[in-house]
Length: 118
Image 1: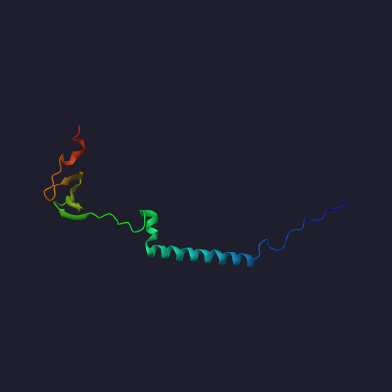
Image 2: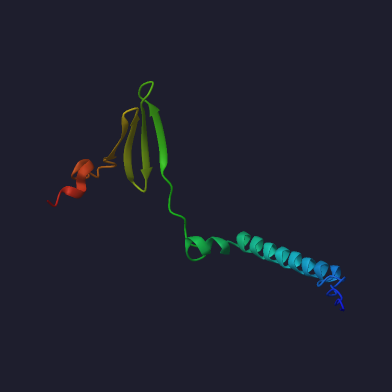
């Protein structure tokens, strides 16, 4: 009776160390190139166009906030933007908001102006 010899296994690796080194260097080079391109796009303002719209669009105006402490636990904030003002009052019981009349413009309906058509 003859016993067959064992299956010969490879002793050399399937992927050589030189191949792994080249693949790693190429991947690092591509990542560095992508980083540089994204950095340049961000500096020129084109990266913001991806998320905010077309390049060169003006960012919406911000709210101007003026705060005044009414008591130890209550604060009143006046929010103003583009001629429109809101009063926000924070208390431990909650938050209340109301529009303010500015520069002779009166807003009908008070805080519930959307219910005037009923």
